[in-house]
Length: 112
Length: 119
Image (tube, rainbow over all chains, first blue to last red; front, side, top):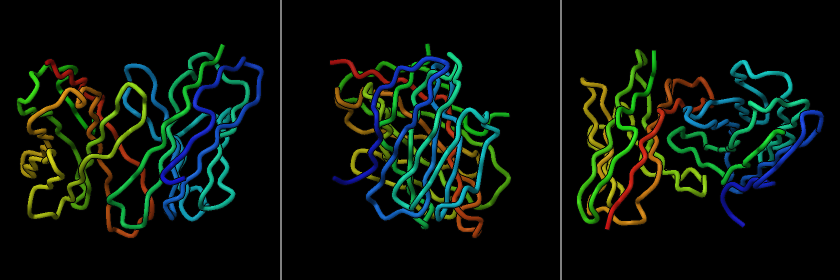
């Protein structure tokens, strides 16, 4: 399998649940990203990991917790979410050359 | 202030016609990169084309070309000979500080243009 993969593709959860989104890239990239795409809003950068260390956190609420155990895997742990957190969550990865950033298919999250 | 502005929320175009999708950007950084992505209804973001701020020539990738006008801070996407499969959302995005050694940076996106190709 090649490219950037995300699981699950769809997730419905209650506000008290704990769930995790997974992203995996097989492109040999050293940077990975989480973006959020809400209806009628531009994509918003949430987290950036470079060489497995977090380098940017765009003031994301603590109910979203990222984890990057190695350069190929990225997780987004979800806890006590709100209905307004319902969105498409996109993972991306990029190489050191900076001129490419490839996205996965996304996880469509619904919080009830 | 918005860093990426896409002024066309939606466009209808006849099949086989050329399409120009507008994008203007705002940055004071001399080093930056501009990206265009296509997002079909399935949700996946598909990379189309990239233009660096120091690139002398406009980028081209198959039927896609980027009309880069640096002084006007404009980076319009041109799709030649449009096809029904081109119907999708199109996003313009920017990364600032490219090549400055600052490490990985995320992209700033515009609100997108919904392109519909009609037969």
